Image (cartoon, rainbow, N blue to C red; front, top):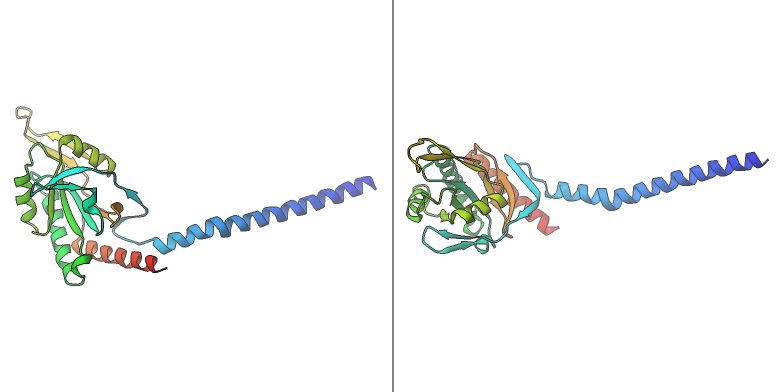
Length: 227
């Protein structure tokens, strides 16, 4: 009788434990996993690049624009921005990307209001050779609305590190110190109005794709804000 009672108690304990596990699993799913899934699907946007569900905050920095005015994190707030890191001596990648950005901008001008257009910023990775005049001439050759900016080498290194931009100096002539090029990442960084990195548009970029992706993100963000 005692053995039978113990067996029944064990079975009852097993059943109770089973139901406790089931209830705990349901609570975890509906209170943790399901809200995360709903958040993911509510915020996710498929683009030609990488869309960040959790934007990366940008720390403050100090650059000078091509008109010798301070350009800081504050200049990124209140509107969308696209940042591209390059250098004026770049043979192909930088001019190609800037051309794509200009074409993208012209496409967006036809369908968006002026306040919705992104601010496009070119930041040099080569402050040793790129003067503000060179940067201004380079940027203006593609679009007069674009902004060119430059920082000290120390600031440039810190900024590219925090924004996950890679650049390596490659000497092309051992006899001349200034004769070098830069092997660098060529992604376009999309920054939201809170001065956070929202997405990376991967190289090589197509103007139509950037324009389409940008408008998709604006639409999705607008839908999320309404909920």
